[in-house]
Image (cartoon, rainbow over all chains, first blue to last red; front, side, top):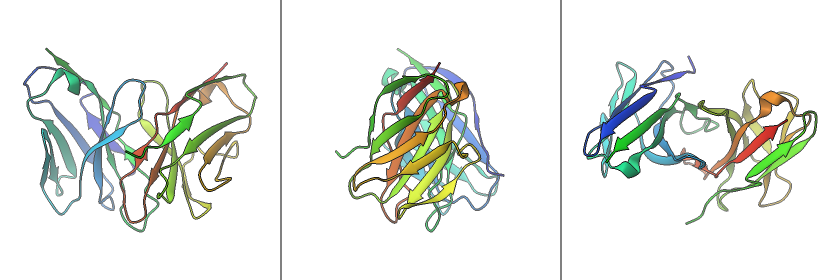
Length: 114
Length: 113
């Protein structure tokens, strides 16, 4: 019940394409869903996050879609660029009043070809 | 921009030796975390720390592991007797009160030989 399942494991798109990464969770107590971007040799960096009271959130070229009934959420990267090539992790957490522990998905390695 | 800093960036140690990984969280943050990432795998939660005590720990965080905030700025992870399977990237993270946004450090790559 603590798992977050992420797919695909890897993804290759052409510049300008819209890669979509999907995550699913089981624990309905989760109420905070961030996406992290990680470049080789670096720590994960928060990209965008959503709470279950909204179905979509956009920040720049990054969009999270959230389906509470299906317990799924996804990351869309609009107009993808070679600089977006990185590993992306979804995560889930129970929110305020909790310890802040993040449960991460397995990660998706994205390659954006020029 | 404030950031979480970790030292050393890479540590090689003999199996059975003790190692201490160091972190300086962001100054106004009060929640501290250690995560690890075995090469090519997902990031795994180890422990969270608040108000000078462990608030939650995972099954990975057994008696070989301990954490400490020895002064007002550092947060350390000690592994008493390292095993080969402890080889991983260890990330420190911190968050401020009332926020679930965790900021991660650059990581320490631990290699146990």
